[in-house]
Length: 435
Image (cartoon, rainbow, N blue to C red; front, side, top):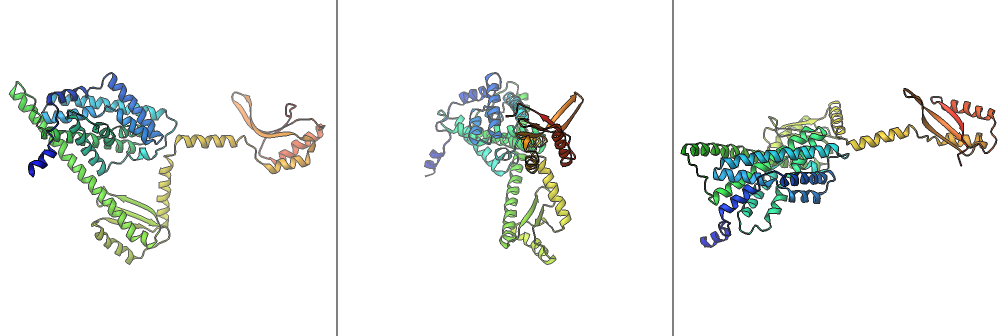
């Protein structure tokens, strides 16, 4: 029975020659010439996909991206204690990362559309699921690489591990000056790289790839010790990071459950919520539309936190309308800073257009009644240039003059318009081109 199960899960079955696998891994590490151009084009495609919020375009960019190469190479280097391969992988990964950041930064800097849509925002805050996807995606990728028949997993791994979108989002954060987006996206990219590398290391050790042999025993001992420490330095923080992200996810779920049971089901309208997981102690802040809690109710709410595994969490219900108003206004102010350049440009154009548009229909009707011989006429605002350093806006009435309008009538019209529009310069001009 055990042998039968072993045969089903035996990774050595269908395994390619180890030397050939290593040669393929080394070939895919380098980022020069065609590989670098492919990477740059893939980054542009991914950036466009994020910019227009198109999942299909982003997937296409991930499929053609060669970013997995140096990360898998680093995992193989750690597993075989190949220090030269590790240096080469690290150098090429750094080059690829910097080129990707520069290309995405340049694209978003030149792009007129800078809205942060859902595809962009999804890459600014990593969670435990990103760790799991990177780790198990990396496992699938390296298992496929070590097979004689590579099969279909490689494209799927490129999509699942999602190395491109975080890099493009980091470039977007740089382009708009939002370092919170930049840091979050780069953090997610680093997590993906680390856990793909770690999963590769585990498979390489499991398949018993041979260590690199050294002529000098002393150098072999030094390199073995150095890489062992690198493995420890990578593994310990990575597991701690996974644990912290898991705890954050659990905390968020408990907060949602607390809000649902204690507030939403009781009909309290929540208008403000702030969760601080990384503070010591953890903090929850809420404010409600019309509910005011008594001291007894507040005490009961704080005591109920233990029922949701949130012992020691500081609960603050904002009931001071002045403070709450200031917080809401501050939040609105922060959000207003994220208004896209497109929206600002549209608003500026509208403001500029309103300066030339004349929409007083009542005034036009009065002119038709008081000066019937004036028709047809045109009334609007225009900018009059005197010289390069002097100009002014004025209301101009252009009339056809097909019917007789004497000078006294025109002067009367000017005087009447000046009374009706006391804050405007007024000019009446005969223009025979009006038809």
